Length: 276
Image (cartoon, rainbow, N blue to C red; front, side):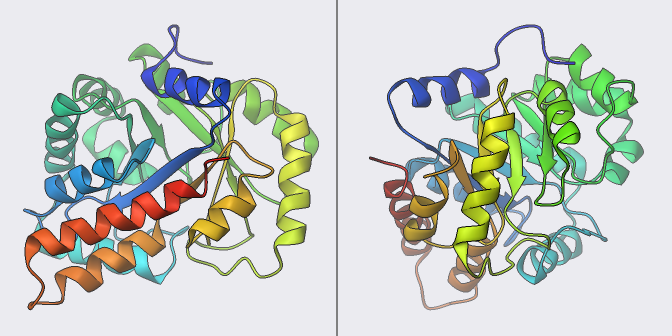
């Protein structure tokens, strides 16, 4: 099941491939480091040259997340972030930027909001895709049906333990891209020896024919990006950015403009790893 028309996300990733460039996706948590900062943080990421941005929907039990993103979610929830505010951040960002914005999170908050209502409102706010790691990939699922109905890409995940038949199924079900988890673990996990990861990505790439293959988890530097995109169509960085944002905002002596400039510079450095 896929959206009926090519999304902005799909079109952008295809354009990158056509000019021999790899994609960089960046993740940041909605409402982090505080409710007022998120719009500026999104703009700073955009200014740094990210090809798409994942805006995390905070949840109290983020099973796939490591400590940095868990802490950012807890901080955002304590500050009072809501799904409505997250969608408002999305609307504000997409009104001024063509950079594709995705929402990433867990099924429970979507269920609480109402599945059809969520995908309808996400689309109306300019969201191009949604990633829900704990939602079982199933074309008959109300999540996937609602996403298709409202024209929102659904990005599915694969891991080093995913069997070939499952890889083929997820490639057929996904739209936008397929998200390869680099390790069997949570976000921010150290990849260790990259050779097994690259061999895994090479194998998945041979099986994936409909979608671009992007890799995330444990990617922290331009060198990491450069290594990973040798066997994938792009890389996604989350925990390293969340750490940087937290460090900047917790430094009271650092002017806000300097904090935002540091975010843009970090993204720009990471993006250099995607260029030939």
